[in-house]
Image (cartoon, rainbow, N blue to C red; front, side, top):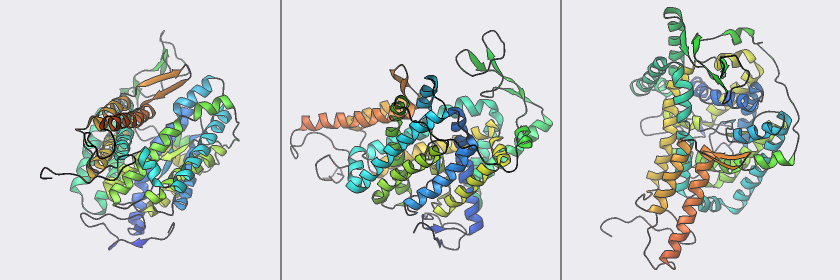
Amino acid sequence: MAIGWKLHGDGRTPPPGEVVGPDERLSWPRTAGIGAQHVVAMFGATFVFPVVMGLDPNLSIMMSGVATILFLLIVGGQVPSYLGSSASFVGAVAAIRAAGGDSATVTGAILVAGLVLVAVGVAIHVLGGEVIHRLFPPVVTGAVVMLIGFNLAPVVATVYWPQDQWTALATLVFAVLASVLLRGFWSRISILLALVFGFALSWLLDTTAGKITSVLPGQNLLGATGQPCAAEGPYCVATAFPHDRVNLSAVKEAAWFGFPDLHAPDFKTSAILLALPPVIALIAENTGHVKAVAAMTGKDLDPVLGRAIAADGVGTVLATGVGGSPTTTYAENIGVMAATRVYSTAAYYVAAIVAVAFGLCPKFGALVAATPGGVLGGITVVLYGMIGLLGAKIWVENRIDFGDPVNLVPVAAAIILAIGNVTLDITGDFPLQGIALGTIAVLLGYHALNAASRTRRGPEGSGGGVIAPGEREIGGPVRPPTTGGD
């Protein structure tokens, strides 16, 4: 059912080794606490990416909540997920704006990309999940999940952590200790507790130790001559300056209630062509998300894979149709689920409702946005690392053989491309970067090497090559894993 959950056990906490399934829930106060963690996990990126793309963050927050509710309804409550702002289109948006496009042109181009994603999801649903499994076998999906998590490592290292390294370290230690030493419900909200701890610590340090001197992205911009400049870029960079760790000035100025500004999309062919390639990354992200949830819950979610991909496309179409940012299933929230073992969609409905409220209340949005960078640095170390290791979990559970170069080589190359955020300039205004480039590398590399390996092995049954244990050879039967005694 899309709505309606049975109480798991006593409603307090799942026993060791058990999980709270998508159709279950804890007590409502505990469910609200888990939902709050999901809000915290998604809020930073969902707020930042619209800013980077020049779109209204409050509108994007509000529409992310609406899109999440719609997603849960479309998948029948079987796939717990939050649809936050997508980063896949950042490069395309930069290219569109560089060519003179405005926000309406940007959202119009992404809306068409969303329609393409809907069509892909419908095709997968009609033709069956086997289509996507042939395209994204476990070795590829595990790699994509790992790329999504580990690609975020530079964000921690270059953006959050340097703002206040000691607060980041203290928050990280608190999060680790809280998740291990606390019991029951408290251990399930360790990330939220770490956020509160880090916020309080930052305020205490401001009061006792005074301001910190560090770099805040987008602030204190200076050019080569040392003069202030307007837009951050190669010749206009953010420099270190003394500042409070906790800055609540925006909270004081923000209104308690207000509707975000809406605008209609505008459609231009040149912009649309730039926005289509990121659809590849979105298909991979959604497939990886469904695979990760299936691995963590032990349920077969293949029948709803097409619906999940189509639902993400619907969310993107709905959000950009009123001027918001594109949506995608959020890896950050996978980390929360992995940490809490609570996969209840009830928690996601709570998170979505809170997000809509945030979107209608600029003051609350400003408060969450005021979370110190050092605090986010400590929390994201844990969350992003857990996301990456979920990819390894998919490999382990599918017994992928990395002794086979067909599996090893494309994955190894893709991980470096993604972690290093390597950019491949296809044309002057069309770059492939990070997750998108790594996804294409592992996808094309695996299938090309697999095809070449099959050609070298000869007809089915002739022996020779190595098939990753537990995987299905394209066009052939499932081969059971072998042991040393076979």
